[in-house]
Image 1: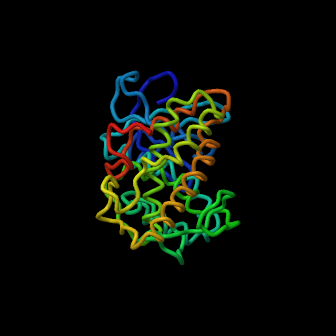
Image 2: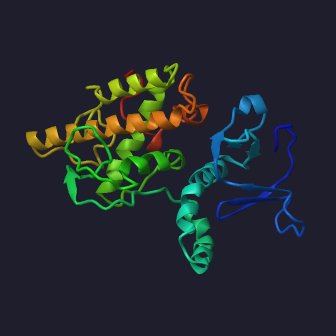
Image 3: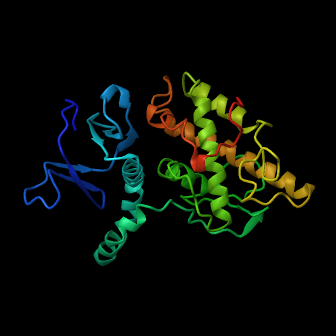
Length: 292
């Protein structure tokens, strides 16, 4: 559906980073709409305003053009938003593959729709049973420095929107535990940014949040996933864990503000704040009702 709010039946097919919209499945006619999924936001809509359930919007940053789609049910909505959000990232990877590899990957895309995104960063160090990974940061802490174009904070920010819909998440290694912690923390950041009038205020708010003593660590009674995380073995490991988590929170806050404030003089983008009430794995980093 376009800006004129007229709905029409649609059968959509995603190939690489191009979305083809047909009037019906197996339609011999050409698609009535072709969208390139680049330089755009994929976000949930205000269903009360539209008067239709399970809606999401593809909005282009440069042109301002937007297209609104309605899924058949909530599960289908989750799958489309998850797939379209990660498409630009996947396309960059696909562009480096041979055509045969792209065809093979496309054949397996239906299976991939039902999978969350996991960390691809290999670990050498752990604290508790969480990976202590290199960071591209100037904040002090136990994490080794790296000049890599992709670190765990980049992954957490890239995968946040598609992963936030998952109520279950299979942990495939210590790096996934680090990713889970950062995903939960991003939600707390977005909750905080709801009250930030501009970028400078947002940066101050997240800098203060990163230092909060109300944020629990694995092993403490209020930590939401103690069944999946190992508590520090001793006082020294506890100090290392606290310092590492704080170091990641500080760096993540800086990078999130760069993404969430396209206009530094105004409030954060609704394309980020619309996820502030979502709960990854139906969990929060702090108990409900706690205001950080």
